[in-house]
Amino acid sequence: MLWIRQRSFRLLMVSIIAIASVLLGISVVAKQPDHVSILMPAPFADSTAELVKSFNQQHQGRIHLNVIRGPLETEAISDLAISSLLLGDTPFDGLLMDVTWVPKYAKAGWLESLDSYFTNDEVNALATGASEGNHYQGSLLRWPLTADIGLLYWRTDLMDQPPQTPEDLESISKSLQSSGKIPYGYVWQGRQYEGLSCVFLEIIDGFGGEWFAPETGKIGLDQPPGVAAAQWLDDLIKQGISPRAVTNFAEPEALQSFKSGQAAFMRNWPYAWAELQKKDSPVRNKVGITTMVAQTGHQPASTLGSWGLSLLKGSANPESTIEAFKFLTSEESQHYLYTKYGYTPTQRAIFNDQNLLKKNPSLQSIGEALQYARSRPETPLYAQISDVLQRKLSATLTGMTAPPVGMQQAERSTSQVLEASGAAP
Image (tube, rainbow, N blue to C red):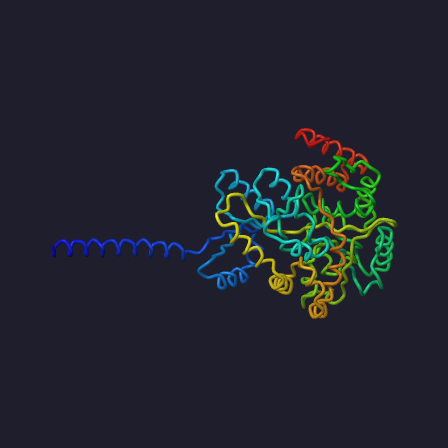
């Protein structure tokens, strides 16, 4: 009987050890944090590095956030993301997206809806303009990290107030040029790339027109406001108000020209403010910010250049990914990104922060311009129609075609793109 009791005891101990091992294994597995991976363009990956470090410290043992530093160029990031999505097993949980990508990614079925993760109060806390471009076909698909907008910079030492209309801008420019105070009146992004589309959107809207309306399928390039917008940009160059070299200008070239004192006005994004206030800037403390000019009777428009976070289909840890989104876009994080890197905030509360406004008076002007934020056409075919506009408008600005002909060609080619995809009404 003794050996039976000893055998039973040994079996009991083996069972206890086995059960303990299983439970210990479960415990070890349970302690493994959720790994969240977000792909970002290089500048955003760099600027959020401290925030990511703080997030991981606060969520140690529960969530580990890894930001993948992607290429610098916007389209290169999109190509990288799309390549992984087409393989059907993307290594990314989230993607920092340009505002123009949302319809394309949504149409392809690559994005998860965020409607169940963000409350109405959170949506309503966004600043006017920052809420643009986050929805597609009624679904919230992107949460804004920054809300870039097109701004008109002007020299406060050369004039008492900024221009309100295109005619004002021309008149002030010519007066300053004739007096020898500046070589040029206005610098902007005239190179054949996305920046040119952003410039044109602001002008055609300010002239009372519309580039393309996805809801109706109406194209407005060959309409009077569209032709007038192209004509005005072309005339700026012909009259010498803008340098002929502006057709090779992107943001850095326009900034360098304005910063060195060569122009009275510049079209650029909010980031330029910090550059203009550096100690080596000849125009430091001599610059103001306002909205773009518009014809009398029409409202100005500021192209929305926002970047936001989207949840990709197939994420293994959607809840943890959203938690990371909320941390990176919190009021505290927004405050950090604005004061450290000049990124335009998206939370209304930050634009009402009196202490911040006192230290950064330009924030008020940015907030006012944000109210006139205008999204580029929200269509999955945006890249194609933007390419059409860039090519045809560039041909006009470089003297190859007259503005009416260029806009006629642009409208025809845009229509062909829509028809070929079956998107034409």
